[in-house]
Length: 145
Image (tube, rainbow, N blue to C red; front, top):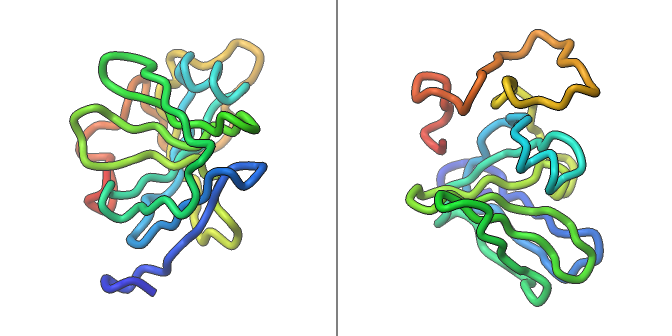
C-alpha cells in the first residue's frame, strides 16, 4: 500500500522486457477510439492513468518511445511490440494501457473518448459516458487526469 492509501499495482509487456510499478492511485479506465489508438493497439485502447511521479520503471530494456504527435508520445516494447503508455507532452501524467496491468486491477471502465472517430466496424453499445473528443475538465476524475 502506498503512502496515500492506494494499493501499489504492477504491470508490463508480454515478454517482460518492460515492467513498471504504480505507487499511487490509478484513474479508472477510459476507452479511446481515436485513429492513433486504434492503429497502435489494433482496436480502441483502454487506458488507466497515473501521475508521472507515481510510476516507476522496474525493467525498461525494451522500452521505446514514438512521438505520435506534437502533443504526445507512445511507449511500447521494442522486443514484443506491446503498447504500454501514452504520455502527453506538457501534462503531469501517463496513460497506462489497462491490459498491461497485472490482475487484479480493481479498476472499472467509466467512459469512451473520441467516439466521433471510432471505427466503422464496431458499435459502442454500453451506457458509459461518451465524449466526441477528449474528456472535459468536469469529466476528469481523481485529480489525476
